[in-house]
Length: 319
Image 1 (cartoon, rainbow, N blue to C red):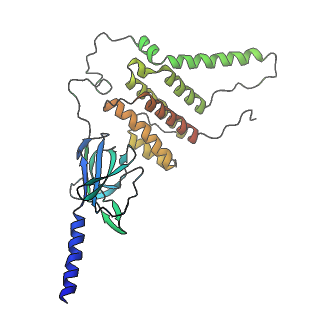
Image 2 (cartoon, rainbow, N blue to C red):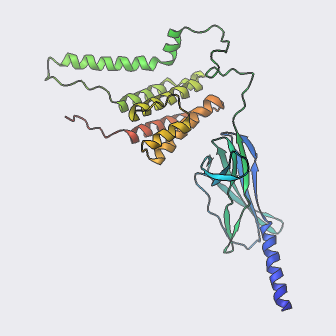
């Protein structure tokens, strides 16, 4: 009986000791919406131990704290990975240390409890401790006027005329109109030589893709107008979705727009892609994020993908 008690105590001591060798840290634990956060998992192993860990791909499972501040009730998908998971193993003394790192961010304000993750060590499953992440909205910089929010109160020296502003920011619209006018003239000119055919008016899909192409060609970000580029890209996408689904999304928030589109029966993946584009635009407009050219063109390509996925099939020369 004494031997059985000793063996039981040794096993419990080993399990308790090993449980203390798993840790999880957040850096930082409090951040602004859209700000990068490192989640570091660490396990101390015996030199001969074998381990197996399956990393997460898109989101970190989490629950958001209720408005009363007492419980974490609602399941959330707002904590996302912004870089691929990385891990490494190194030796410290007579121990083998495994460390895995996630780079994550929260896309909405709130306090999130990140659910515990598991690792298999020598055919036994162990869990890392849960962590709490707090995300808040970006604090306004009182030294910088937010013209798109407080436009009527901002003092702008030497304002440009409306015509000049229109020509600088919407020259591609004029170019589009001229191209359409030239096409119409061409078909009218050929009408007397060929059998009369109806003039093909560019479809909603064609007009939208042409607008995206014209916006990219203007390369506003090279002129210090990155914010204006994302404002126009967001306007193009919202206008297209409003016309396609008979909605008014120009004044809605990103979440409200996603909810309205979900009610229209859009696929969940398409709604997620729309949210990615609109959230990126919000980050540039309000959080002053400055993506590089490759990321800018990637977002434009996502808009083209959304248009292609939500447009009906078109057949050339269809009667």
